[in-house]
Length: 276
Image 1 (tube, rainbow, N blue to C red):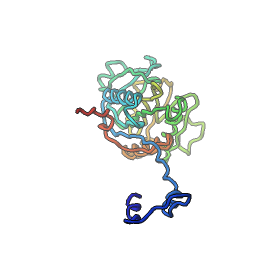
Image 2: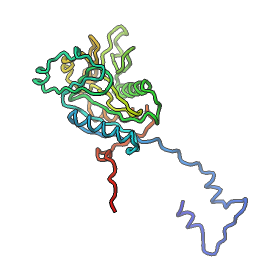
Image 3: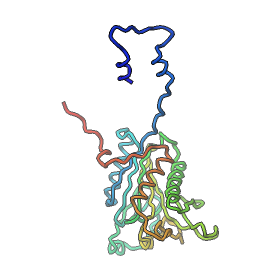
Image 4: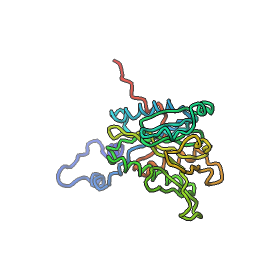
């Protein structure tokens, strides 16, 4: 617009002032303003990262979101080496493997502040840590959990899998369309979150190509007789993790009305104060 105005005003020309605007200004006033784009969701692809490092990172990002140092909601996407985590309400009896068995299998053990019971993370499982300021959405953790479930159901649908909730439980289950409703659901994604000042962290674990034998170490989420499954087991072919990450980014953008934008971990660091 600046170039057009400069080109349209010659030396010695006079501008008229009053009730009638010049034609160019009339046109400008009738042009609708472009719609404001939705806020961004910063998506960080971390690859494979030890659980302790990811935990430290999400706590740091959550703190920066609480204080306002980070301007956008964040979604960390990661795979972990084998690890079992216990939530606030976990019962030790649901960790069926001994410390010796865990150590022999190279499986770490952590007690953390998230809700929920015991769960497993490992290679082939996409773990997502949405760090969302619910004050900008809706200050309701139940609403938030349903949105996370909705996002994961959308992801499964992109790959031709049906996803659904199971009454009384948090998470996502599946069964083939050819199966009757009397067939038991299989759990494909677990969810456990924590929040402070309405900023969330911890999140979900979606089994993509996960070695499901690891779940024999625990009673997953404290649910007796639960059958765990993965996208690969349900589909019969190896699912590409990068494709799942892309689908997750889109789905979370949709359910939270945000625009996904891939950023590097360096973008999450607070700005350095200038000297001088």
